[in-house]
Length: 562
Image 1: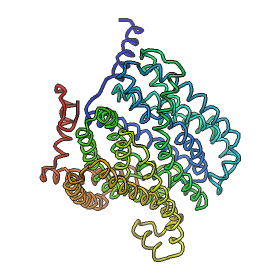
Image 2: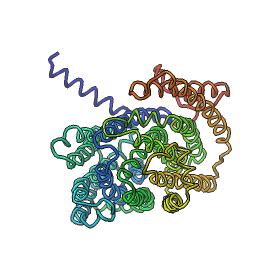
Image 3: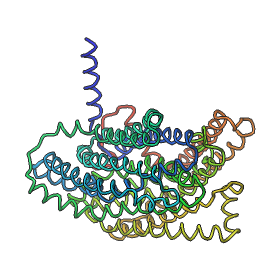
Image 4: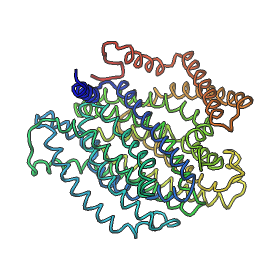
């Protein structure tokens, strides 16, 4: 076989592997979680490169602030044609034998025209928007980065449209690779484009990543064959999609509005406050993506199909299974991140210009953010349950509650933080940051956490009422998982102290070794406690992983629906 033929065969094998169909809630969720982990590892490499190059500085404040308008454009406009609104319509088109490729082609054309026009308007208005986004640091550099980054929501929005087809076909592997390539593009921007182009190179790296995000899905979309559809017929379905997606888009935009306001507040704090806030926010997004996003994404196509078929009992069973397993993983993750926060931040970000004070401040913010990990995961799944049922107004109300609570809490807590030495000293001592400046930014993280907790509480209450969904089955899980996690967390903390007595934690090897010793010890103890309690979720997780890796013939799991 010639080298050319071997290369072609390898490419065909790679494409075939990426197009593999994955069914079953747990198998799809674990596949998504695996690639989410890989993507988040790249995201951590990205953040480490940024931290080591710039530290918690005003330069990074400008970089992160430049994302706010493009991200808001994505949340408010690009998400109108999200996969969560498109999937129910596409499923019906498939059932009616009309096909979906023709419809999506027309949707893509409409999307590019509309988004390009809006991005052009924002490009012109950028000098006037910058002082609103970050009034404390606005300048020409912020305007330049903002203008370049306006390409990002166009590319990511197109990718989101294509993802509706890949998810409907259960091509979760293809869908999962996209975020990994996105972070790879940003890393290329940091390492290759920044030395040549300065700060503009960082923004072009983001655009490159967005281009790779959409590019990986184009071959699969191009291979689809289906009946053509006229623009008139396509716009009829488009109106239906928009009717479903407007409330969801408004709900999604609430999160970006919250970040926009919190970023504007942070721009008045000590230099580097925005960077610390975003570093901690990105770190807490790692377990959220691996756990909450993976399960909610894996569950959504089946939820849409079950509700459309009128199979209410199976619909609620699928929600209950996903919810149980999300909490099974999220509760221990919360405890271990809090216990190991300093080791995690120092290992991931602690290099170059990112000093020990920035490490401690970011670790404290991370601890506050991760308290809401379970709440954010619950909100993601509850929202998708409502979207699958075609009831998009409720998640918007829940998001409004979250944003209102987060902003009011952040403003109130920041004011109290400066007005009350008792409150300030208590929190600084609790989080071990009493001797470093710039701690006001922690109130923004705490405010965000309060908003997320309230959103999950309200969402669970109304979902259980609207769908007659019983929360009884979660009580045993919550007790077992929380109890085992606390015991495991205590073991991890004890091992951290023990390892610190003989390791030099001022070195990378020492801090990594300390974290590994503490984390592995705590994890082993947690698993042993759950095994002694004969935890249902542990048994189901082991069974699903065992089937995947020992290559047993596929079978429908107890919590799956064929």
